[in-house]
Amino acid sequence: MIEKIITDSLIQLKVKATSWRDAIQKAGRVLVADGDVTQNYVDEIIRSAEKFGPYFVIAPHVALAHAPRQAGAKTLAMGITTLDPPIDFHNKANDPVRYVFTLSAPNANSHLKAMQEFVQLLSTDGFYNVLDQAVSGQEIMTYIESTLSTNRSDCNG
Image 1: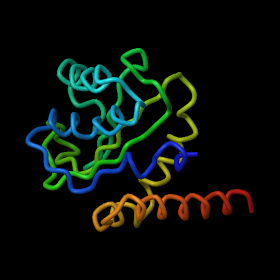
Image 2: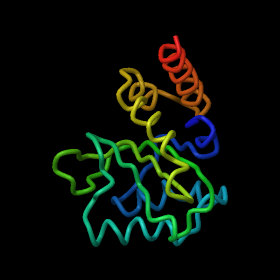
Image 3: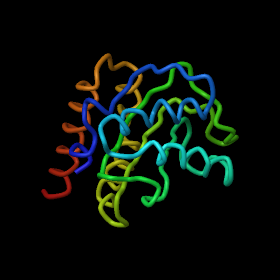
Image 4: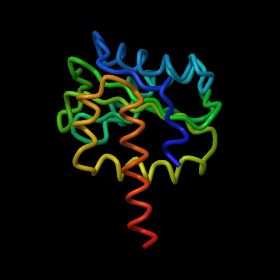
């Protein structure tokens, strides 16, 4: 499922950002360009973080940036942005953030299976190494597809 919502065009590697706001803008730009979200959606992620704190920094070095679907989520999609250097998002437990996953979910349930697989990926030993060392989005896609197909086979066998 998740390999259907992440595409090569939504993966950006070694992005330079000047602040957490800049990192969110840069991570969101590929979803805006792809037509998955509106610019307002990206702006709402920033407004929400300003109001509630960095609620989307979910694990060490990992942000899952998202906003309410009403803010401009058009299609189910996820972008992957690696930051180099990592950026402080003001989340003491999990800073600095090196990986920004930007989620667009146009309804309440469409993303649940993808999120299950996303959690599996985050708990896979090699995922962060692939993110750090990849020189193309295709390398990341190949890793995701092979890891999830192995996990699915293990679950079905």
